[in-house]
Length: 198
Image 1 (tube, rainbow, N blue to C red):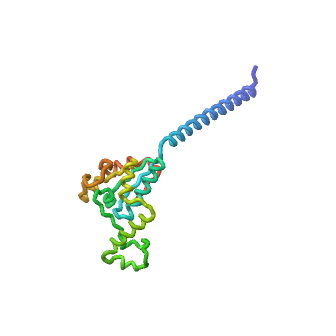
Image 2: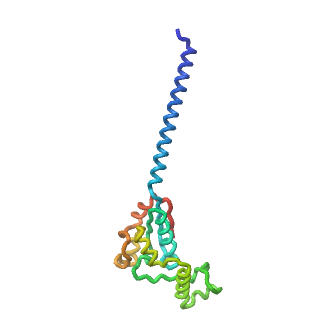
Image 3: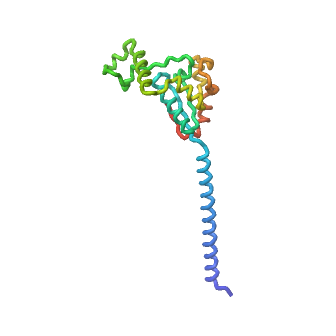
């Protein structure tokens, strides 16, 4: 006849054996799932979403430089152009640098902020910025846009803003994405690794 204590010891050993086996199976499965997730992430390129809202020369550079740099690194990239940012996509664009209200703008000579409101200061500042960028080998906005299109950066115009400001897709450069709204862009951007509002 088996004693009760022997039965309890046998049951305890069985419980420990089952627990160890379940722990080992769970650990193995979790490790497999983590390896699959790591492989999926490694196979999927990083994704950058940018919202461009400004239409001046100094604000046109950041989204285009960031987008083309990320694309060079193999990332998937999209820029949503809305409000004044749509001016960057226009075929005929005359992007200028606003000096008034831009106290951080470096000038070759020190001048009071009030002087930046004088007639002719905006064209002068625009010329200076273009020259400074050219002297330092920085691509122009036209060159950056051409490069972005060539590299496959998604240049996405905001349909609502186009309607509000009376823009036509015919007035935009070739190679842009179909006109869409914020909902479409947010859906596209929802799994981005990096999202920027410029």
